[in-house]
Image (cartoon, rainbow, N blue to C red; front, side, top):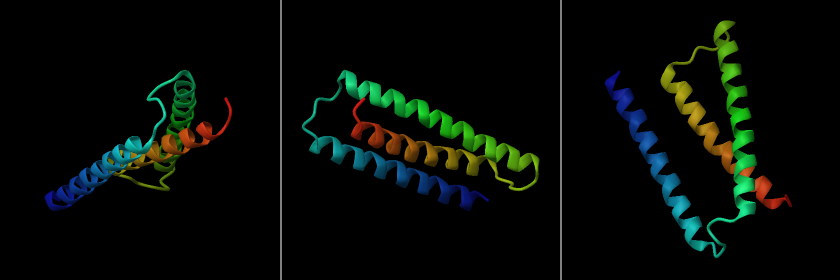
Length: 101
């Protein structure tokens, strides 16, 4: 049990660190200003839609648990939510950033 928790913690720290490194590399390559009104609007729309995705995912997990379709432990749910949060926020930001708002 403790060994499994340590492995999961190491995996989390690895992916968190890799995300920070990728963010640092992409931020350094960009010559755009750090913040303007358009980027704030894009980030706001991306965050709004990410919240909807997270709520939908939690509803599916909740109903799956109520109907005995899936059983997930707390750590698995938190890991899944964090992963989906990062992927959907990045995807929505890229999507809305490519469109004219």
